[in-house]
Length: 384
Image (cartoon, rainbow, N blue to C red; front, side, top):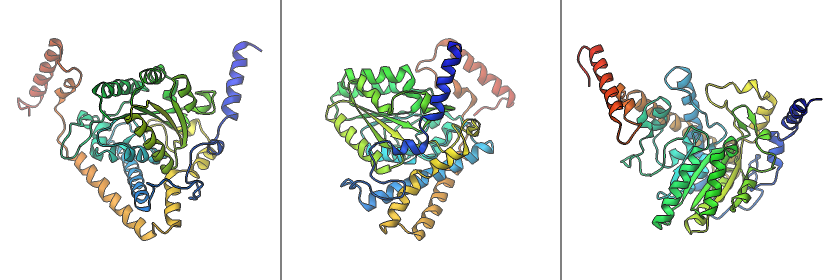
């Protein structure tokens, strides 16, 4: 047998024997509520019924929005869209842990966290609809945060986060930065260099990995030989912890502690939240080509929304009547956001030049002027 065929065989064996959702969920990790809606550890003091109902409502709203966004893409009203189906506890847990003065540096599957942070849903629709105004988070009546917009290139947001956190430290502000990424990003140099820098400089920065088991079509088993991605923290000289990413309580509690530590100048933390991507990678993907229906159905047993609903229902904090009323409210909120998006006056064509440089070079201005003249000729001399 050749060396190449031996390597191919080893890769195939690892991919087919390592980690399926059931095994992932059985690994030791921080968890308060299991997939049956049962508490396995005493809940933290902050986790009162009112707070958890809010978490649940935000998660349901996020999923309602997600379903609508996919439908808009399918009908040609939105560009390629990355669903966050299965990551609702991840986003909502993070969003509620951040203080207004903190800075979120998101990756492209972070609409739930951004919603909690005050970014309107129509901003997200604008972004995936190709409207640059969807990345404009200038503080306003609707937007109160100083977060960065989505980052689609894999792991490059981690380097941005290091810069943000370094600035916060230099300013002497008791603030923290938090950056998210997927499991595939942890194999990139940008991620590894960023955690190394954060550890060496003792930055007020929290890294949170959405380990949803698939980096497009590459399974987690081929990404890293370690049992936990959080083990990568050790080489960077920071604490690493793995939590159940389908448990909103676990995600929120761990992120709360890490942010508090960062604000106090005690350094960065790497958190791995283990979940499962219940959707295709994006609307341009067909996950059935590389993962089995059995694996997907098994993963649905652990999904975050049903888990929290079971818990709240069991303790009498949520009812069918409340459920139906909230679903209707979610539908109304999402439809209002869609109306705001579809009724927005489109940007002028030459605006495509306006987001490349702070001070555009002369040749780019010349091209912009040329486009304006072409558009005016096409419109018979009228250009708004």
